[in-house]
Amino acid sequence: MSLSAEERAAVVEFRIEKALRAYEQAKGVIGLKYWETIANRLYYAAYNAVSALLIAHGDVAHSHSGVIHLFGQHFIKTGIFPTDTGRLYHKLFTMRQTGDYDDTYGLAEEDVMPYVEPTRELITQTTTLAKQILVQS
Image (cartoon, rainbow, N blue to C red; front, side, top):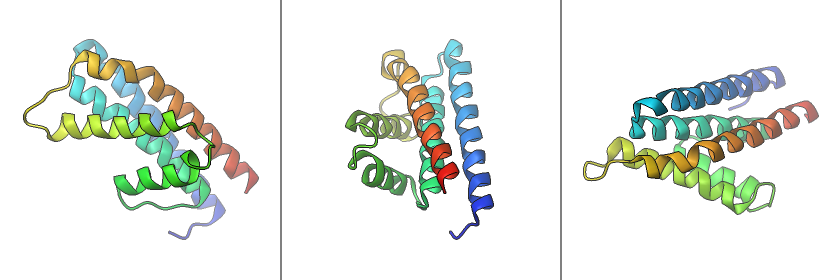
């Protein structure tokens, strides 16, 4: 994807907005105890935030696995983010897969709630860096 600086900034901003909306949706459903839905929204909040960072960095991923790989390659292995951040992102992906597709196991409160606050932190950290990259470019 070849974008002008203005187009790239617009796409990054849109992804950040989507990340924040998905996170608010996850929080809004907590009282209903729809754990699979919460896991889904937490993952997509993180996915959009990480995607915004990758786009700001000039990377394009064409799949969820590609986002995981590029995030790991450019931001975890290089030490920009700690290994725990990469593990968190992968755990959110796994929980979303379980909640959306596993016919033998459902998610429960204890599976999902420990990831609500760390997901907010991941969103804050990745989107802050994405905005910094855009300013520097």
